[in-house]
Length: 211
Image 1 (cartoon, rainbow, N blue to C red):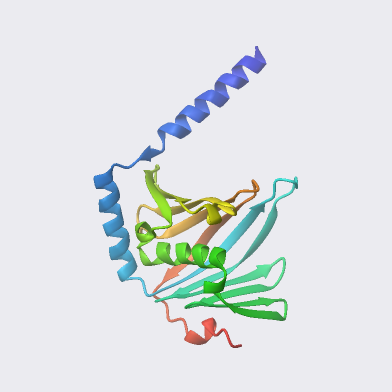
Image 2: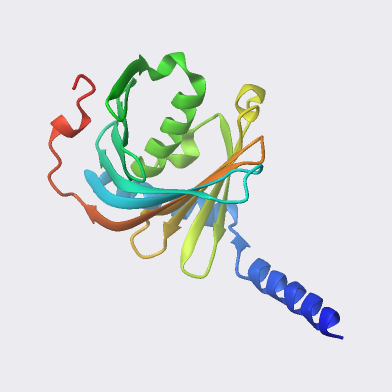
């Protein structure tokens, strides 16, 4: 009896979860896309803390890390991991700079398609042009207090590494709050943005790839 009740509870929870998520129509998708573009036009910079959880299929424990995220128009991003290790990734245009606890690497993102596509997707979400990437099919969903955008790669080359990217926007500010990146291996990464600050002065030196 207990097992039966438990199964019923799980099925009810799943049904409620599905009911909370609704696929937007084409007209709704067009409307939200226009609003995202409008918000992005007025967003010059973003400063936020973030928490990242890496789920690796062969490991029982999740890998947690946290740090600070910076975005500045037009094409500058900085991921600064602070715990449990020091790690910095800077995207400045097509240039990528990595500082792994003092060991530095620099390269052109155009030479690495995976880097280019994922960075381009993040930039697109920040700039409100997420539907304009021809390399992904895009679906919009409405949840209780947020929007979910699912991006599925069209390219077989990209599908070898990434099967889906999910980006969540709050329905009040239409700003990115969370992101999931699913890999073909079964691993996936969840990133949650917290304490977001918009249009604060961020010096260009933060994105200096020559440091």
